[in-house]
Amino acid sequence: PVFSLENLQVTRKISKDRIVEGKEVEVTLIVKNTSTSKRSEIIELLDNIPEKFNLLNGLEKFLFFLNPLETLKMSYSCKCDYVGIFQFNSLTLIHKDYLGVTNQSLSISGNRSEERRVGKECRSRWSPYH
Image 1 (cartoon, rainbow, N blue to C red):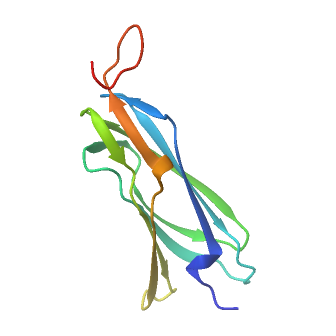
Image 2 (image 1 turned 135 degrees about the vertical axis):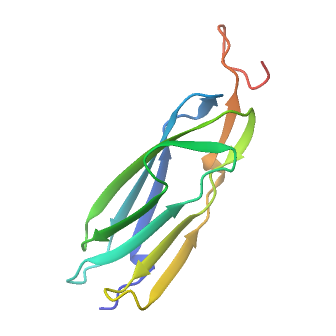
């Protein structure tokens, strides 16, 4: 069978629903290969973090081999020094052949659940306005 990027299931998990300005947040990407082909695939995964976020640990770009029916977890951490509402946008998957001659790419759009508010830390409660 021919491999297709549609054989990949990608999930993004963000460690906090509400992010405090200047505090670290961890992002975990989970990729599952549902293909039953007999060979591993070369996959590149790019996470497009919001513009005002700064990467702290790890990378938002991953290159890896993925075997049939295998699941991989990758993570990085970032922070935002601005108050506002930010959207974690699309993920880009690129499948490469072993010689690096051909590529297929697929953009996976973020959904509303990947929108995050960044606010100031208050002693009494979290607020995006303090």
